[in-house]
Length: 263
View 1 (cartoon, rainbow, N blue to C red):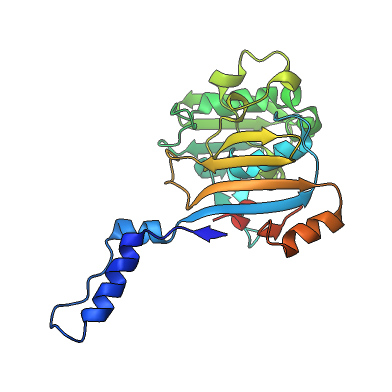
View 2: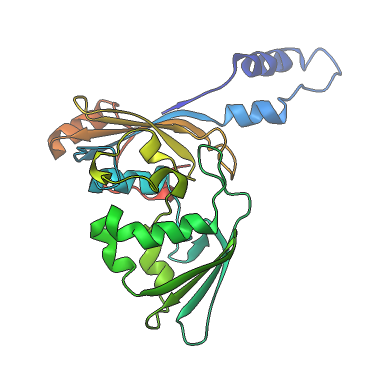
């Protein structure tokens, strides 16, 4: 893991220390921008025994990765097990547990700059079974979806469900303007297929090297993330994974990655 530290900060600190005993001038300290840069991480490399065949959401392993790095849901399960905000800033459920109302953050955007709206949520939930058949169980109890305005989503269920958001932790929203014309999801690969609202953007996939690279989303709506590049290296077996870790080729083995593992 490499942390970036501008050379000017080092020089300022060294010079300030050297002259602090010879002058009454106060020590010079870095500006807030310099402090922010000082704390940036240039790269984190994860490793796992895994295989990615295609960079689309129908590839189970790739889907797991972009759910962490590139996509967001309405809410997420935090490290303590409690629900946390993600695209939804608030939600309410009716007394009979069949009507869920969500208010979206009005400043959330996709990585291509377009706003995240209630239409995206409705589109995703109505097409989830078509795009990712292995997730069809998550939406089979939806009776209807209403979008009274751009930031409000009302989900009516066929039967009560008090644990909807815990169940939907793996359900991440897709941009309607990107996916609405996709007919064959299994051949929809690459950068456009990975447009999301999350903190990182898919950059490249080297199948022969077993390497996926994600870069920081410079325009992430919650603020630029502190890691510039995240690499995900795939190995054929546990022995080669452990050797890579011992040699310092990866920062951490991670067969499963949750969002709170990444700064």
